[in-house]
Picture 1 (cartoon, helix red, strand yellow):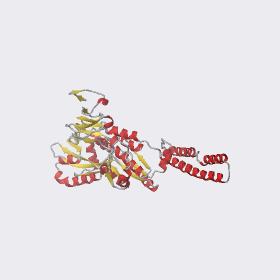
Picture 2 (picture 1 turned 45 degrees about the vertical axis):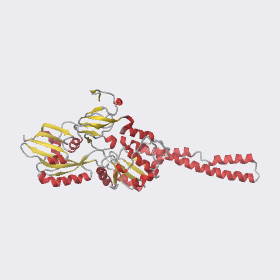
Picture 3 (picture 1 turned 90 degrees about the vertical axis):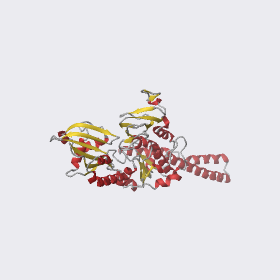
Picture 4 (picture 1 turned 90 degrees about the horizontal axis):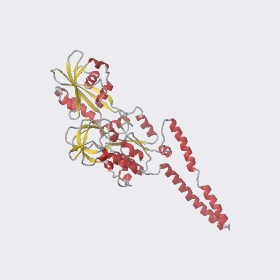
Length: 457
């Protein structure tokens, strides 16, 4: 941290807005901050937003407390600390959840109806006995016995025992039941809101397909050259390197010698290696963002139009692409191919959603990932592609009580879409609350910090 012109290592809890901090590769972001002028950095914020790959932050962007710098270094100005941070507001939403369980509400309703009915009947009986000439005290004693016998005192005990048997059944299916009343609420659930990354999908980017743009180049060759643009003999330090190295056979790579290696730079969006092949020829292989590789390729005039159309079509579907270029010593740089990657759905997700529909339970996707990626995942799962962004939802002030008009104002809109993308934890929380106010019995599933408030609600 730099304060009063002096750099020093300090406890993150002592930071205040306006402090200048250094963000370095491998370090956690200690507070919400604004990136200062300088080189961009890559930040992994999957735990906060669910995004599968690191996000590039440039000057003026806002990294959030709780995320991790995976590449690059820069300075930043602290903009918020403690409860005012994105993470702090998420924690405040967790603390704000205080509600009576649905099962307890049902029991209370039953007991109220039974008690009111019993009192009405007993009053009639008491008046009837007095009209028939019975003494007051014997009539009152009879009515007291009648009231006690008509109230279902054992109902909570019987219900608890029944749900305990249900917990045993669920435990046999490897489900963890934290609270007994959840069994009844799950049985009556008619709306399930689900996170995408790691819940509906594997949270693991895998190779989808490839396309060659050079004669005599096939999928294996494109993958091999992409792997040569990484340190294949060492553990992968980059998400894209991991994708490529996991998809290629590494044994043939041992015949090549890596002479130079330029790691990925967020400002150039590419990485390259100088390689000596088995035949002794030297060449340079580069992989990176499609538009960057295309601009540096000499065959852009030949393949540029088809390449850009392909990349645009992939972008609309939310599929990430990686371009590969090759240059032999003294020769031109040629774009040779395109690799596409996607975080695929879990093998059983589509069938699970279909069966949920058969049981009368609707499923909606709520994710912090990009809307194009959300639409492609929803399309593959048969959920529909009517995915809205977070700007269709209101903001939440955690210092004030939840508005009681959420369901009336936004419920119909939420019910009519397949899900939401690019949302923050507060949006997931508000979606759940709006549906609850509309009378839905709502379930939530997710695996990140950004899902915690909605899960609690």
